[in-house]
Length: 522
Image 1 (cartoon, rainbow, N blue to C red):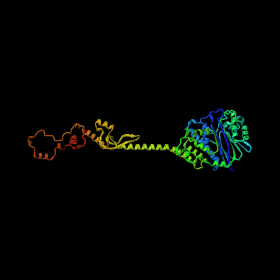
Image 2 (cartoon, rainbow, N blue to C red; image 1 turned 90 degrees about the horizontal axis):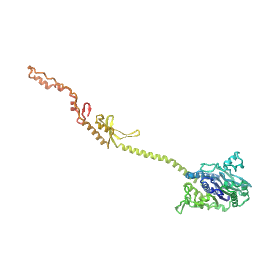
Image 3 (cartoon, rainbow, N blue to C red; image 1 turned 135 degrees about the horizontal axis):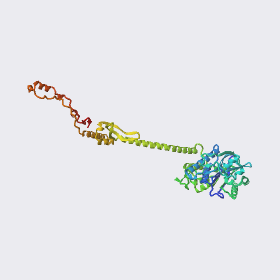
Image 4 (cartoon, rainbow, N blue to C red; image 1 turned 90 degrees about the vertical axis):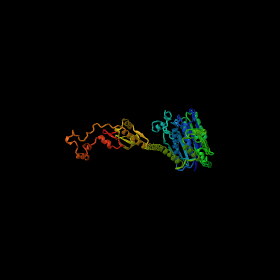
């Protein structure tokens, strides 16, 4: 047996509030009331965003448990509220209640969080199905407060559970109930209960058969009682579906898929009104809603009329439009999974972006250092090495503990033998354009050694030649011929004696080497 909702809804700002923070939707298969947290910035945005995120559930024939779809979509709406707050810090603290019914076959899935209420009249029994998630209700449940004392408690409006930026995964009350033709449900924000007691509400629900009249009576009574808060009411009757109901349920709104992205006639469309995040075209929502019977009231209705629809990101924009265009939640493994996969991919990309950037910077730095080191190895300079003149390859610098030069060639030129001017130059290093230039500098230093004067010998060695005779003997006025011959054959003492150091150095030194004077290389 196919069942549908017959419905009526109304919302009023009340007698005290400056704006309406309530939103509600009622259709053939979905009814939802959301009460934005009064007194907080963005309460109207929270309720409107949540209700508009749920309207695509208004369809029949869910595969499996419809309650799972309802709970998942409410959690998704909560995550979108968190995104709104993260992108618009001025909305911090906003939140909303949600009380929703989703009809699927002969079952009603019920989801609830906050202090909006759900009442049911079935089999002549009127009862409250929802449980208030308030501080005073917790005191009542724990036996610390009597129900009649709750209305005068100073913290009666303190909520313990809501949708918003306070909890990433809020706890919902979820249940599935049997549906039967003739039963009536009332969903309302707490503005009704602030004025009317349950007895008055029950009497109106029982005695007023026309749905619109029932809703109007409850709102009018609330306003007459002073209505210190916004008041929003949805009343639905469970009824047997007619052929007309089934026909309209099968309709889709905008067949061209490109409309979902906000395009029309091949051109890119811009949002009607600039809003936080990326705004979906309001006419897409309006045209979708006209494709099926429904009533949209409160801030959600105002948002669609003005185009100020709170949307967070392009992903949620496309997702919302697609849901409304198809009138169904995506099957497992399709749109939702794609969104989750896309979100996970974005998260992974962000997570790897910083390491990748750091790695790229490290590669660039390594390349710069490598090129710099290669350049240093094309340079030369002349300096000292172990008291000798040496040619170095590189530059006379260090990179931390790493020297940027090494000894390429050593020479036999002692640094201590150089003129003081040249020694001072070597201490500061002598830069060269290339190896050939460095070798030229070394030759110049060698030439400076040769230019030094050689000091005279201090004490020449005595001559080893034989002493002359003091006087010629009368008997030997003429030398003996043999003596003369011997003198010719045998070297004299003078000839065989060791030469002096200075004389030997002068005679034996290589013309191309520096002279050794006084034991010092010059």
